[in-house]
Image: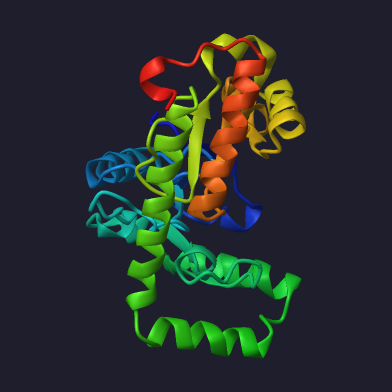
Length: 257
């Protein structure tokens, strides 16, 4: 399985009359925390597999507009017949910088949409009306802000990768999302992601999320959120460099400038 969120869960008994099994696969691409993205061929294989095995698919597409290097992220609903077995969610939080307002929408299979509506009816009566109005304005208004945000995170990504690399910590460039999934510096891998994160916060004043917090397979990595501006990212890199030097990590001369 391509790195990312990929889970199989058991559904509610309300689906017992469905021709599909009471199981669902949940996928999240671009992924949080790994920032991994997939191509349309991946979804084509997934849809074919789900139909063969009579499994529903829930696709989380929250970071769909935060892609880099001119490579748009596909939707599972681009696959012919995907609506037979899939539902896809997205959020206004990332695309329109409305984090915390908790508003988004879902499209796809009518059985899954009906089930979601039923569950939602037990939990709330709808979002605060001004938030709904703001969401409508965002969706129906000028869309130049979407490209502006994309370029903002693209620049932050490039600054993060370049400045941390010069500090002695090589971080793979994420293809999408607002996160970088960074392997621990090899010389400090023995610390584990939790202890490394604690030391980074204490000695470099840089906060990252330990990979082990996302499951045992996340050990050896940390998630870095690109939520600070470029100047703050460069300052974080300088602090990281000082920390690495204090830990006896050799900084390659080509990157030490």
